Length: 235
Image (cartoon, rainbow, N blue to C red; front, side, top):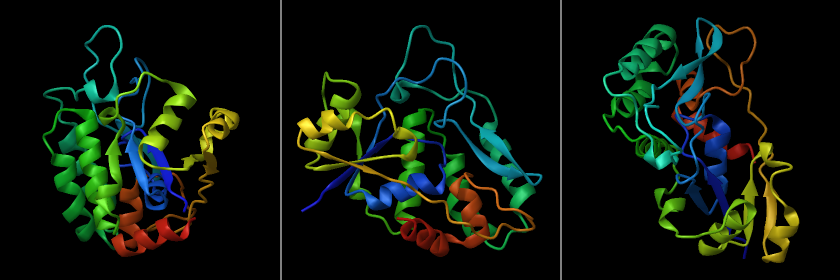
């Protein structure tokens, strides 16, 4: 019997492909004890939405006043910064005429307004609640930090997969060249490439489809029931 394990950092209101990975996995690990990048942007605190008809970053301000390195689970949002209010206002301005604006905001607005200051906890809460709304079992969602290991890289992925009782590790589309298939083979594991093909859906008053946006965009245009179908049919 195949038991598929997937692992991904806890992202900020991620795209459809992220939830497709959760849907296809028997166990999904939030990779919350990986190092947060010291400079530049990260999917843990930003995502793209359609702003004035263009794909633009929506960003949660983070506190970078620390020395050395930190794991995602140690990162905090910037205290006093009104990014939550700005994000909600931006959604109201840019999506209020979309067909599923009310039902999307009913779920999303409380998640954005969440006062949790820890980035990993905030994102895990949001992804878990959205996953439940899409009909997925929240019991499959775990945290890599709950498993103590001293391994790294491919060996760490193998350890987490075996720990969860898996025999298949699902890697994302951008993982080619990162996973060493021989390492997994030596541990008795198979690699399965997600190969997610982005479903094209109608975007309100958008002449050409813009892929790779937050799941919020899909929900605003298609509603949660249709989003669930888009995720589960893109296998």
